[in-house]
Each structure stands twice: as C-alpha cells, then as structure tokens.
Image (cartoon, rainbow, N blue to C red; front, side, top):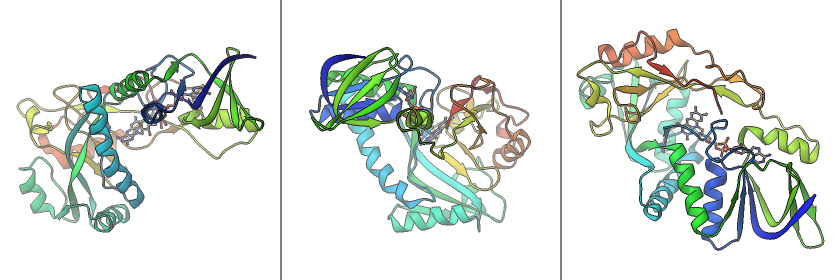
Length: 328
Ligand SMILES: Cc1cc2nc3c(=O)[nH]c(=O)nc-3n(C[C@H](O)[C@H](O)[C@H](O)COP(=O)(O)OP(=O)(O)OC[C@H]3O[C@@H](n4cnc5c(N)ncnc54)[C@H](O)[C@@H]3O)c2cc1C
C-alpha cells in the first residue's frame, strides 16, 4: 500500500451532498481536507444526483425542523459565495386526513418549534390555492413559509467547487476499503482500492447506501441498514394551466400523509411537468441493481392526482419516469 505522504486534518469519504458539503465546511474553517469518491464526481449511482429535492421545515420528527431552519441560512451563504442559485424558495403545504398521526405530529412540531403555519380546512384550501388543490371534507392542510426546491447535482457541484477554492483536495475513482487507527500519532490511515493510503487527523464517513459495505470491510460488523431503490415520476400539466403550478405562480412544495405517502415539487426543472412521486421504494443492494424503474403504486397515485388536482393535471399516466432507480 503506497502512502501518499500527504497528511490531512480531515478526510471525507463519499462525495454525495453530505460529503461534498462537509468538505466545503471543513475547508472553510481552515482544515486541510481530502474528499474521496469511489466513482466519477457527479455520478448518477447514489442519492444526490438529479434535478430537485424538497426542502421543508415541517416534519413529524420535530428535531428535523431546527436543522432545516439552520440549513436554509447555510444554503444562502453558500449561494452567495458561488454566485448562482441552487435553492428555489416556495411555501410548503402538508395535507392528509385530519386525524392522521403524522400530520398531527407535523402540527405539534410547528407549535413546538414556533414555525409560523396555518391549519386550513377544505374550503380555506380551495380559496388559498384558487381551486388548484382540492381536499376531501375530512382532510386538513398545513401551510407554512419555509419550503422550496434544491437542485441536487448542481448543489453537489457547488460544494465541491467551493471546497476546491478553499484548498481542499478532491479525488474521484478512489474507493476506500479500509480505515486503520494510528495510535502513535492519533489519527487514521485511509486506504483505497487503487493502492493508496492517506493519513488524516480525523475521518468523516458519508457513504450513503454503501455504509454497510464499508463498515463490514473495515470492522466485519453488519449494520441493520437497508437501502431502497426509488423512482421519481413527472406528470403533464394540462394546457393553459402550466403557470399555475410554478413557484412564480405561488404553488408550494407538498407532502400528502397517509397510504401511500406522496410528495412533490412545483413545476420547475421540466416546464409543463410536475413531479409527483410516492415516497419509498424496493429493497436493493447498491452494487447489484436492476436499473429499471421501481414498481410504483400507480393506481393510487393516479387517483390521488385526480382527487387533488382535478382536471388540471393529466392523471392517465406519468409523462416521464426517471429511467434508473436511485438510492434512498
Ligand atoms: C429519489 C429521491 C428523492 C429524494 N427526495 C428528497 C427530498 O425531496 N428531500 C430531501 O431532503 N431528501 C430527499 N432525498 C434524500 C436525499 O437525496 C439523500 O438523503 C441525500 O442525497 C443523501 O446524500 P449522501 O451524500 O448521504 O449519499 P450519496 O449521495 O449516495 O453519496 C454517498 C457517496 O459515497 C460514495 N461512496 C460510497 N462508498 C464509498 C467508498 N467506499 N469510498 C469512496 N466513496 C464511496 C458513493 O459513490 C456516493 O457518491 C431523496 C432521495 C432520493 C433517492
């Protein structure tokens, strides 16, 4: 094993959104940082590629809210350093049966974290969105300000560029298979399959769905982590209604609790299409995948679109699936 001789304050393993933003933050704080990625940078085999992710402060798990509120400022800070946008703000709208446990937890979390929000009944939702979102009589909606869309591939690229500007070293096609403790100098050796070894004072592991593989290779332990292969689909907005579903038109990011759990973003990345997928997917091994769209509960998704968006969105079938499953 060839020791590169280079020494780092922090070695980050895995260059998805977590690893790339970590490398940005550590290098910004003046720590000499190395970011290692097993595939090409900006590859499409992990969780962080693509065109959109929802950002919202309203979660049933109330510890998320504080993190998201803090993160929204950090997104803006990174955007101002790079000079372009990756975060497109919109309101967030959560909905479901009025006694749905998760939706009740969302409302409780808003109260606990002092997140300004309004709980709206069927009629109020109709008025608020001028008929674009329709709820059943026994449903309620929760409207809050902090929502929006993150462009994930663009955001990963932004963090890597900023890390590089701060002096970080970035290496792709470098799969880590071992991390050895150096008790003499209080650090670690990080070893890659292409025969290199790097010394770091600290090591941050952000390998997403490959966590089990790496932990097993380093320690022999098997962690109870099950990656899912999931599928995103877009639906056609009917002619004449396209603007109504955009951020500029006041349309929110949204989550619909119940079975199935559905979420979506305003029309942004593909004009005339709106992203409405089911949250979840099929079990998979990240390195042995079918690369075919994960089966979706299409019938209930169609029905949900018909009931919520009426005749403004074509619910006969998705206009596009992402061709390949992604990891969650
Ligand atoms: C379809 C989909 C929709 C989603 N929607 C939302 C949403 O709306 N809102 C939201 O907040 N979140 C959403 N998520 C979740 C979010 O995208 C993920 O939580 C996030 O991208 C995870 O990033 P990560 O860096 O942990 O993992 P990854 O992006 O998978 O990055 C891990 C990286 O580590 C590398 N790696 C693995 N093993 C090694 C090794 N041994 N050596 C070197 N490198 C290694 C991998 O190649 C990979 O690049 C969604 C996820 C998916 C898949």
